[in-house]
Image (cartoon, rainbow, N blue to C red; front, side):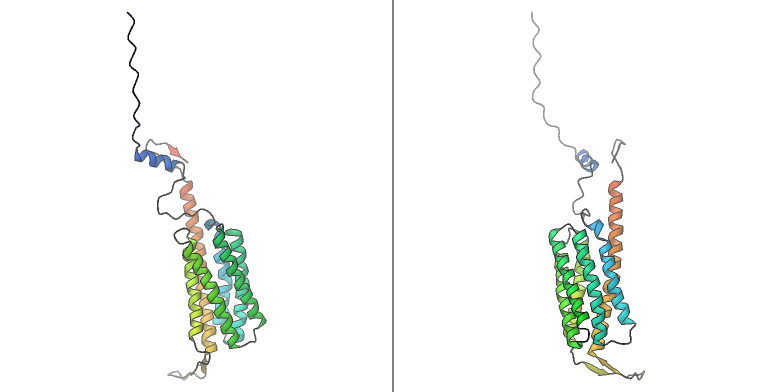
Length: 252
């Protein structure tokens, strides 16, 4: 009598996925990142020299004005001219070469070109007096500050560069506001307890504000550039480190 055929196995039910195993497999390939973590890939690791190079003309402007006894409009225009031309070139070239996002690259390029043009006009009309200084600084601060602020706001929570762009843009807009608030005919006789002779004029105040802005922005850009370098370097080292699974096997 022939043996009865063995019953065919029924359809195999799918095994429920193990969350720990799934997480391990995703992390083993190094492709999935935790939700909410800032993605440092792309242009951020290559961009850190740009803020440091931008800081050089800004700090030079602040130091030159701070240690100069002459706060005339001519000194302010010359300082703005040199800082605008050098800083504009650095920003334009840095945006073209080290930014991958097309919109951020375009805004950075336009911002650098505006700074370069305003700086060239300041050097060409360095003898134009206080009206020229107020007009050029206000134009420079309003346009470049707005562009940098918009760039940072558009890229917030998507790149660590956004915070620095937003902060520098806001500080530059404050410079424009200060130049608009100070009356051009302001003059106050010095004196007081120390009996200091002289007159505090709008030129002294405005050129001093320009120098203070350069010093503060320059120091901030140095800190931002170094922080970006260390942050991206630490993240790259963390991603490159091998991960050990529950069974003791290391995965690159």
